[in-house]
Length: 372
Image (cartoon, rainbow, N blue to C red):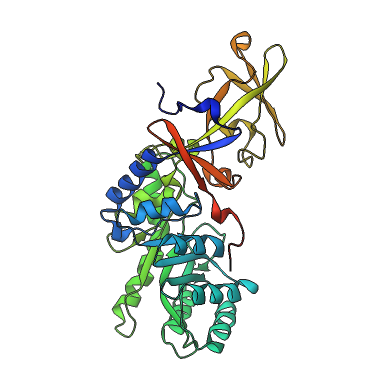
């Protein structure tokens, strides 16, 4: 029996998402092995957004996590984590929400990113009013140009302003966060060289900081899944992969050196055979991430020789060779190209163990708000 097929498939609704628990466990163990220890990991929860997967990692000794939203941070705290970095610079009403989250979970060490003095002023004002300390990491823009402070003299000055605790006594700067997910070369040595070249100016700045005895040694959090196997080679940084916990077709194809297994599989059914050679699945835009070209959204595991024709909200039309032998109602399994936004389309997932669905997990942090 193929590993992805479940024994009780006929009882399951479609479209739906299957999470293979043993494969998640395998990916967690390999993540720890690559990092060298659980203490060096600060995995991102944004891929899966489920308490149960956080708890699986806690069971393997991983104690620190990264989140993208306040809801994800709350989900992680609900699961039992005690250190959560929100990997965004929070502005506007989110600063007040963050302060309320800290009040609700006083035993959890929360932090967030910051890349400008303007936001430092806003955050400090909120926490100073409560006479409450808050922890920040300076976000670094070292090539991606999406967020973060550019490398250079002004970055070092910004760090000194935060570190001296004179200008913003209620903000405690713990270190730096660097995300370089733009490096996607499939050849590991080429990707490694590009990542190391971009990292070098940052390392030079860190050397200056560590040479100055006035400042504590900063904590450095690096990379996502594409850069994980490169930054894991640096013994003085924390690694923050995320997608590798579930993995997907896209990363499986572009990161061949990484030993992670597909743990999230889409379940769909043939709902029509509209004309000779064509079949329609119930796998529309609302069931699989559609930000990539049509032929880079899903790869089918038990359907040979197909071509993509079209996709709409509820339908995916394929041209197939074995049209006569395909039945309406037939189960089709597929691995998404991009698992993160695909999981975000589902309120709950089916959990598979020993090739049988044993229950459901709620994708609780797909909501923008849980309680705070």
